[in-house]
Length: 213
Image 1 (cartoon, one colour):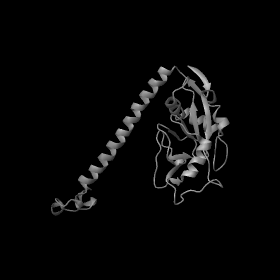
Image 2 (tube, rainbow, N blue to C red; image 1 turned 90 degrees about the horizontal axis):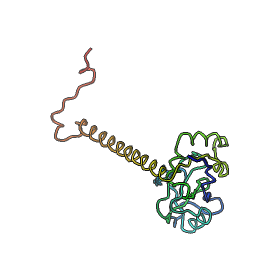
Image 3 (cartoon, rainbow, N blue to C red; image 1 turned 135 degrees about the vertical axis):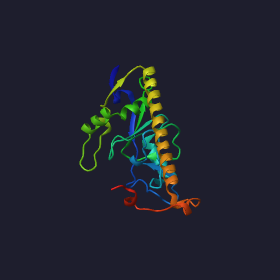
Image 4 (spheres, rainbow, N blue to C red; image 1 turned 60 degrees about the vertical axis):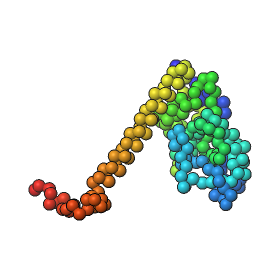
C-alpha cells in the first residue's frame, strides 16, 4: 500500500455557492434542488419536503463555480462535517451550497467509491475532527482537507474492498427493511382493538390482573 494525500489524488476540489446577493431560494419559478449537508445520504442524495429549491438561473450560476461531474464525491466541509454522497448520473436538476465540496479524483490512482468509503471511516472522521476549526459552526478548509493521508492499494484491491462493503451496505438495508416489516406485522397482529374480525371476541384486562403477585 502506497500512501498519498487526498490532494495528490484529487484533480479538482471546489465548492458551491450560497444565496447572499447571488440568488434567492424557493422563488415561484424554482424547481431545482439546492443540496446542503442535510441531503447528503452517504452515497445518495436524499431529498425531502425541507429541501430548498432554486430556479434555472441560480442553478447555472452555482454550476459556474461547482462544475459538478459524474463520479464526483460530495463532502460536507462545514456544520456537520464529513457527510458524503456520490454523483452517479448527470446532475441536471440540482446543485450544491458553499461548504459542500465536490471532489474529482484521478482514476489512474483511485476508484472514486473507494475514496468515498475511506472518507466514511472512523480514522478519517477523527483526523478531520482534529483539523477542523471554529466554535458553534465548525469547518475544515479545502486546503486542510487536501492534506488527508489516504492509503492507495492496487486498483483491483480497491475494487474488491468496494464490492465487499457494498454487500454489507445491501445487507444492512435489507435488515432495516425486515425490521420495519416485523414492526408493522407485530403491531397489526397484536392490536386486536382495531381488527373488526376479532373485536367481539376480545376481553380486556389490566396488566395487574394477569400478572402473578
